[in-house]
Image (tube, rainbow, N blue to C red; front, side, top):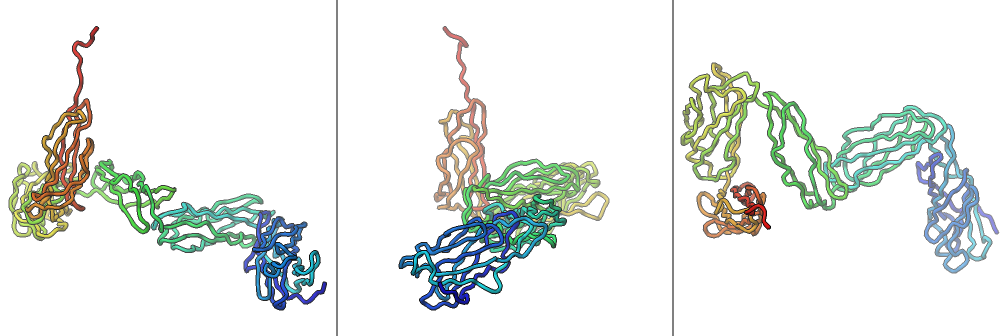
Length: 559
């Protein structure tokens, strides 16, 4: 065997570290940097400052032995013709992983490889043709006093979804470090915005004790998301650790279901309907959807209300918890029925105006500003004691005496016919100004009506059938545009109870689409509501009674 000046190097990546009393791996890169093209390295032996537990050889290599703090790696077949291709040739590098458990100490330290040698035994079994020992500065690393793991959940989420990051820090040193705190985590891959954390901000850790620090983030772009961080008190530290990855978008979600809403504020909130829809079968990557609820809000003027909720999908994907703005009960409110009318037709709208409970004022005058495209015709329905006057821009409703004013906690209905409505589809807002009796100041609100290109009418014939599970009624939906029938349109039908012959039907030349509704067997009267819908905003409903059927035996007993 001939010894030469070492023509190879063993190095570690910058920042390499082990943790006291925790299994850790050091990855040494061995580079053949000075041998001739016919010379190579076929075995490497490392000596470390503490006991070696295991090794991870590069491809084509094996762990030959581990004795205390020594570990040797060899090519898989050290004395056959393949040795030259498995060995590390000139200018070639290979990575050798060595698993160790560093002993605990009172303070952190910089530890150094004891020795490393490289040799070639390809040409003579059991003996080295040549061997080298690395001299000079050997690789070193930090022995950390704190251990850590980091987890991000859930595994998948959507854009704007909430990700919870947890970092468990354990004191592996023999001392008691105070004020251990995590750094600000680095976000890798997709983008995310920190919402909260860390919680707690710091902790004192006795030897062997652990503390979990948590953050919440909002994912703001699609892709793979992970986090990297450390924790320290300036004396002891964790190695740099990286969490698992969270997939943000990028794949379709299935069975998306909204949570129940949590309500807040001083007003009383009563769920009227929703969520609509109750769930969604699938949602493509990057797509969005919405769920809606209807609530009845009651209380005194100035009462507040808000909502919060989330959504989840199959596989454990959850969204962030979204919170609405805070609403308040105004002194006055207004609603319009119907909320949707067809273009270019006369229409009668009922304005339901209310004064909230606790309102100190009663109102004797309501001025309605006429939106563009509407022309006042008449006011066929007025509360007792009220009169109407109108010009091209304003309809004014006036109470004749204090006894007929709009009082606190009351609602009045005003029916107004418009001889002309807009000729193009869109939303029209009516501004309403409420003036208290004896005052020149007023309180304002508004109400909106949708003007649609289409109008829908629906009938049932007959409107009442036997609840025997066999009787039927014919449901006819008629679709028009500016008073003319629309043919070839697909109408969707839904029902609350009973069975429809089909979920969709196409309008004929008269604009009519027809389906059949079959009753449910029932012993009591039930009401089925059938809804016909065209497009996004044109629909109508009709009700059908299923008459309950009971069987009476006469006489009550027989023999």
